[in-house]
Image (cartoon, rainbow, N blue to C red; front, top):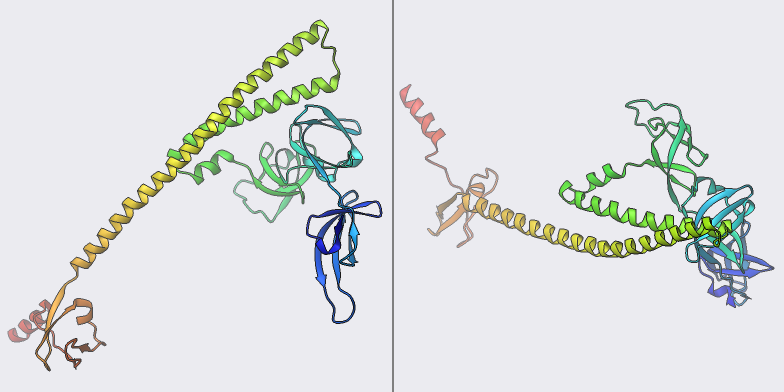
Length: 357
């Protein structure tokens, strides 16, 4: 049991046979009257949202929603088939229990089945999915505006509005929560722009290998799930051959997984070396900057000035000496005085011209 005073965002509970999830809550203590909890709850089965006030001491049975990791296999009439990622069992789900945004989900896409007391009531798909555009008007060359949109159809058959520069065959990223276009996908280009080429080429190679390893395991699990769902006779001649091929594929996938783990370790070590290299480069250039600053300070010209009041000699830099608005102050006696600069090349040239004339 859970009391209304313990409500937090995301908490699920039962009320009147309905499963509700807390979306927002606020503890209110009015000047007069009893305190209460103002709550906005969402029905996890129907999706409806209502606002209700509860007594803080009211208690409700806490509901636990199970989220099972699955892979979408295929559609068969009014049924959508999913494969359990742990047991490889085939799980059919009625079309009425599938959300509207499932139109963006393609085969082999990872999903989550939401169930309560063993009954599946919804499917969660990734927030962002990359799909290929299969039909749209030709893009306008040079038009990169994103505020003007045109209709397009993606590989799942769903329709979406995209910018004018999108063409058929382009891959785009879609926000499945809103059904809106996010960006055109160009993994290789974005990766090379983000990293210098000397690093990117190593990470790209590792990335391709790791992707192949994950794809092989996913495909092996997908085929096993299809075989289980088809209920084929494993004792027949054809069945024995298919079963042996499946065992071989799974064994290969297991070995690839071992190499995958080793590559993960190599990837981490390369990343550490890359960070160490950045630190070394930073230290080298930092030392050069310090040397340049010291050289700049050493190159500045200094002058000796005799105070007319106390007769002591002070050392001043050229910038202080040439400042027309600043008065010179003796650091020994504190007297303020002016000096007249003599012996500059320009002054000597002017005096020579006057004498010649």
